[in-house]
Length: 383
Ligand SMILES: Cc1ncc(COP(=O)(O)O)c(C=O)c1O
Image (spheres, protein in one colour):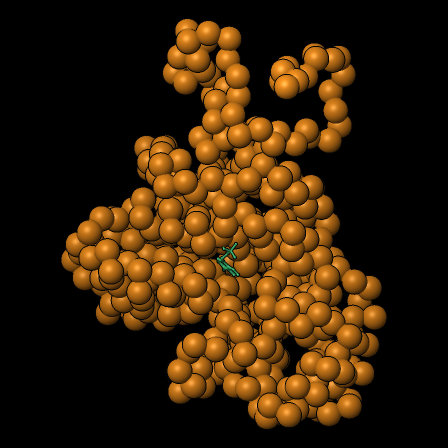
């Protein structure tokens, strides 16, 4: 058998970050291994405990969020789980926005209570509903700044003031808003997290999460939990995410301007009953969105057509855009909450949230604006 030998040293730095696929790293002696474990942050021993590609992509997101020591997790849901389990223990109470991503809702409704952590829910646009749901045991609140797919905007100032006053950990899932739109740690949050799978990575080929706590002690706890619970990401996903992140700013500005144009075009179509986009003055939270996000109104647009399955099938068939239950890809994707994210939600609850059979959410991509708008126009006129 051929002996494995380290790659020969060479001069010159590669422009592209090398992919370090190795699960384990060699050291010279037991003394050298001790020194690696005990002192050097940039020393790697075993990839579940850290590897160069994770450290590199984490530092890129840290810079965007204005923090340090962020932890790479294998998915956005792993990041949500770490943030919550690192903040509470059995007997504590957790509050969640009633408009969280579906799997986050499932985590709060089913898994946390099973571990002896009761949960309740609040309307993120109404701080009084948060106060009403609080209990003396409430230790953490989980919220998304812009909810999916309603695109309602949470009262982040109210939540920051309330959690500070009561000593509650405020956890913000910043996946939708991105650090270019909102930097939670600067606006009163204690922990911020991302599904990097979505907008930050942007190419639907890497599954990844990121989480960081403002308090270094809490952050260290999250990191230890991630290592112990095996919540470590593969080097290849980190490498892909790094490549996606390099173009994030460009994608962000292009997809946002496309989203504003698409929202305007949809609002002019007689087949469209309503359009939801935080950048439009007719959005219920437009002023709060402007205050929190400035010009960064995001790349998500929701709209409603006739609530009839034959019509929604015909629309999706006629539309030259991928029908796929995701968001954040460089190309535009269309999702239909009733048949995807909200399929397990009771029909009455869906209707109460304004999600009818005719409700769609578009994750707007970076295509040419005129071609994108025309794709929607030509599908709608066929209805
Ligand atoms: C807001 C939000 N948070 C978390 C997640 C979970 O991310 P992942 O699919 O990477 O686990 C998603 C996924 O769509 C999401 O939209």
